[in-house]
Length: 272
Image 1 (cartoon, rainbow, N blue to C red):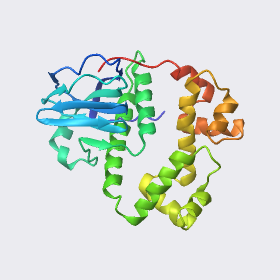
Image 2: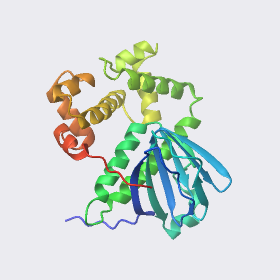
Image 3: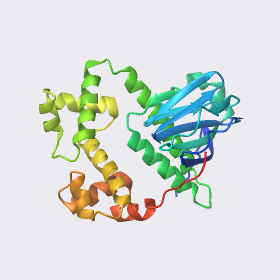
């Protein structure tokens, strides 16, 4: 038996999903913990001390402890955001500015769908009766995504990185079509090997992995409904073989499409 001693730099308190009904506003409060917010839909307007943040869909915000924050205006009817409270260990707080993860307070996420998946997984793990180290691990992945997105944004003026972002945009809008690495390279008028290298450097994924991930993320949303068959979901997401769709879906999520449907057909909803 392998025994590992793991010391994590963070400790999770709790998290949740807020879905607005168009009534009320964010309360005024000063927390003793950090809070990371990710907006999936709509716009969250919130003030921290003297700074006002307008956090749009696909963006994150980190609220600092010991700072008063309060909502600006009423909640929009379409607002939907995830929230998570956590603490830093004393050793990390002392070296915060030297941390490997450079975390901007407010930034756009390069892969909002992946971030949504991480928060969903966090809420699922949080339901377990016995506390699991998985909560801290998922939080670290969330913070890593924020850090990586900020780095990619700063590097966007690099020609190779700019090309990678164009490929990413094409994958996001054409995933349901028969696209591949060679098709993307042809459309972007570049060498397929070069495109593959700059894409891996920018996003730590191969082009094929990125296409599969985008298709799986789209399938996750379609599976929640009851109107489409598994074959129809696969076809709408660019898979023309249901068996291959199951294989790729399980590789990326760890569960089958049917298990995903059972797990996520009911939303985890609570207030922030």
